[in-house]
Amino acid sequence: MSLLSTSHASTPGIGVEVRAAGIYVMAGTLALLFQTTVLHGLTGGRIIPDLVLILCVYLGLHEHNIGGATGAFLLGYLFDSFSGSLVGLHAFAMTIVYLIVYLVSRRLWMDNAVSGVAMVFLGSLLKGVAIVAALAAYLSIDRMSLGVAQTLLAEALLAAALTPLVFGGLRWAKRLAGGD
Figure 1 (cartoon, rainbow, N blue to C red):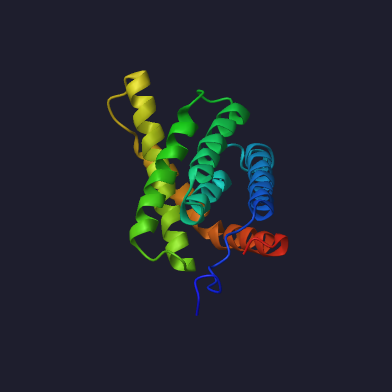
Figure 2 (cartoon, helix red, strand yellow):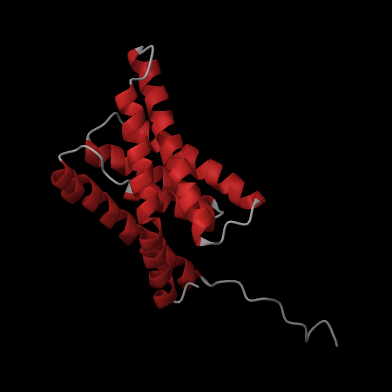
């Protein structure tokens, strides 16, 4: 066997990466629109599943590159813009969640449904704590009320329950586009 006849594993072409980016842009747009309009209207703004966070965790589990980190930041920034909250608050929280999920997924095997659900649950709690801590520092709040903790837990459970549906839809779209 000569060196010329050896074959290497093919790297994904630019077309595959562009299609994957298009899928993430479409999924992010749908998640943002659905979460800030339809779900907000249905629940009266109480407990809303964080579809954007589920997408951010998916990026942390599957996109270990600058595109994944940029996507998580942009999801948070756009969520700030759509929801009318303090600019940078969700961008900060989503970036923290992406970083933690990325670091955990580099060390542990995270390619099954249970670990994805667990990461979304923990990521949702982490995002909530990061936002509450940032708001507490900004607004000089001394303690967190029990209602905030209950809402964070309920939103984390709801997001975890929707994780298999969202992850399955993303895997299906990537397979359809030839990305997996």
